[in-house]
Length: 270
Image (cartoon, rainbow, N blue to C red; front, side, top):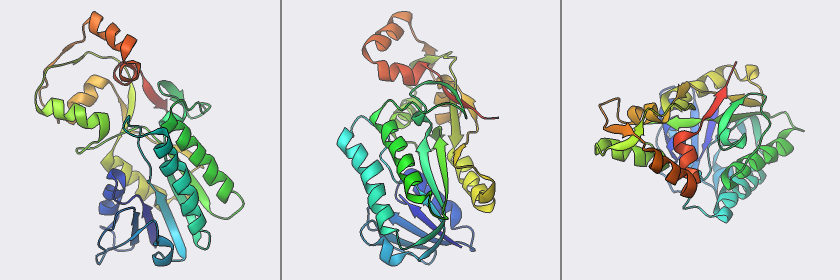
């Protein structure tokens, strides 16, 4: 069985590679912008030459490539990687026979904050969310006329022991035992651990016919306080209640940060 993982040098891509190499029944190919060295279990290629290296018949293509929602990326960079690069990669895949294409999207396609369900209408608000939604539509337009099955995973917050972005900053603070005003925040954020995400991919590959085009997964819902403690392996963290004045100050001048810390961001899956 041939499995191709795009974005194999990224956090999720690396974990998927490490997960699938344990199963000898898989022929694994990784595609990345970096030049990675192939070994006896994984054949690596880059975006310029992958169509010459990967097999014509692809059982599962897992597309994790993308820029995350970070302030350091410009609008042009986000659309260039999340949309334009996907379009170019699809063009280079035109002569390949793909059985199932799995695309990693984001719950943020539904909105920046709030409580959603599987019937919620997409309402992307940031450049990142809009780029993901455009990529979903690009895939649909590209494959709807063909036999390729599309599975779009709208992921919640992915927790790992080696996080990136704002979660990495939270983990550093927790490790340094710096007191943080994050106690008793009673919000709800859907999360999935990296280990659970990898296991879900195994389930998808084993039972892909049972999965709908748009699919949501999560482990559970945690508050910001619980996420902070998770990142510190549930060791005792120095937390205190956020003073009312500080909370209002963040809400007034740092709305993006306020939403991440205090608002809900969860999905109800029945």
